[in-house]
Image 1 (cartoon, rainbow, N blue to C red):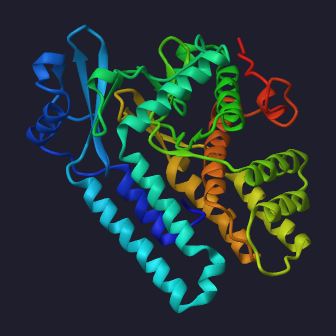
Image 2 (cartoon, helix red, strand yellow):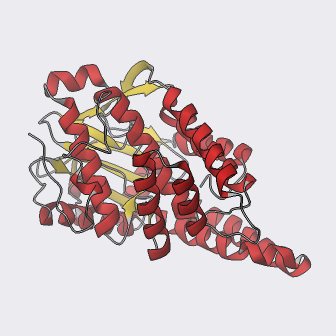
Length: 383
């Protein structure tokens, strides 16, 4: 999370998450059969060439014996032991530092390390991710959104802690404006529905999808919005939730001092903060953000088999903007909670999608943005 680690670490961590060397098929096959039984008992076909390979897992396209097209997410061997060892070392080191240097206790260093440890280990439990997907599908059903928004169906009989089998969603990335216009003649309404859905989930679910980059937010061939990859989720405490609400209101009004006060209500500080200076610093960051324009560079196949456009700001510039926000807060004597960084990064992703699909939309005044108006409201589907 960019709200926890220095810029240099964040950028290097990002490289580890994005793409890694794929495992040999024999290793993957052995894991699948150990976890779910002989492949021939469950699957009619598994593509030996992975769709994607990341630090924790790699993904293969497949077809069940019953005919459904699926993707199989397979956890890499020994990754759990390696990660547990590294995270335990970080936690112990943080406790030693707090003992040797009492000033570190005020930063809750060991608490932060413990939070990172529990969050990352949760990502290793694919049964937990399956549960997240099913909870999100239930949320969509309760909101009456199943006809316009979806998440993949989980096949529980072929899912374990190390193997996740789910429906294959076919579509295009939210940044592929040209392809989206072949699916719908109103891309603006589509991104509004996506944003309303995500924002309402933040306000009404116990957790939120914390990785809505362009490979995980799709426009399906049938015109629905598809959310995938629920391994990374965030949770918002009451204090942070109230502060984020204040921040959103102030941002919509262009009240930068109000934004500064909201961040003060959210962050930890042991010193007096010059609110007016803090507000001016935030204004400068917001002005810089407004100057960033999308630049679609290429289109290829994403990790789940869908078409994905690669745009210059999708990862690097969004991360850079978040780092600027974190720098400004820290320069003004604040340390923000981890969930703030996760929330803001997702908001920056949506800001970029809006620039691509709805460049003239004013989210602070448009009446269709119902999710920003009340926590208990249902999402309006724009048709």
